[in-house]
Length: 319
Image 1 (cartoon, rainbow, N blue to C red):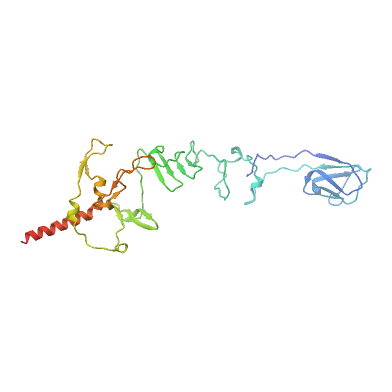
Image 2: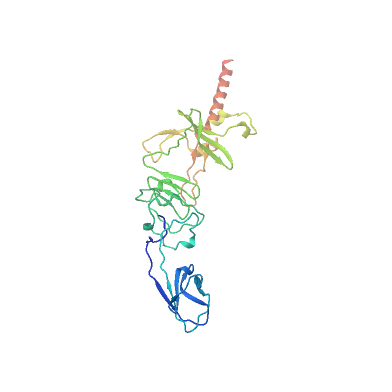
């Protein structure tokens, strides 16, 4: 049985008597509001009057059919009404019917709400989690609009989140911090056809995708001929390639691992599209903004150099 507020009890309230000071009038004011004349018994000179015939009543207004006199003795008995619990009809409970603080946990049975919808503002709301057996906070939506899962504090850097936490920032960022599990994406298509796992968008256009089959992964950047203009054959590739200076080195964070590669700023003037960032750049707080390299952007230069060398070899062989 549904109810709002304190648990209702089924009982009869006590009768209440009201004495009137009479005068030559047909209108009197009741101490308690009533719905109609049948909710009170009216006595004039100790004779019970007939409801709706001798008098009518609504709210706190009592109206007699005939006027009394100053010498009359008149009183009313408010009849007790049975207090019952009822199930409110759908869409009948308004904000005005719910007093602040009137509904507490004890008033709500488990499973009373299958869903909560509305367009108003939910304030002063706390929960131990969105889970039927939650004992700690499972998800938080903070005042900035960040959605926090398995944690309560948002940070702009994933490494500064609590371990095991995921954050969806109000600015659209998605951050996750795990110590044991990688970020996983699954796409079930029911076949082995290569399909996109991640689709990138920039200014209304898609510049690339990460695609996979059940055995391989492709990292694709846009290359359709319809997207390009001013297309000419590459020349001088060998000369440019000879300017590249491959190095062997270790990263400071991994002093025991030596690798092959390039220094980004040394490549930037030769194949600028392979390099991101500026040499020795810092942010507004003086922190380094490191350069990066996409070594796949060197492939066209390598291919053309091989072709140029092959042409020179062929020429020498024909002499």
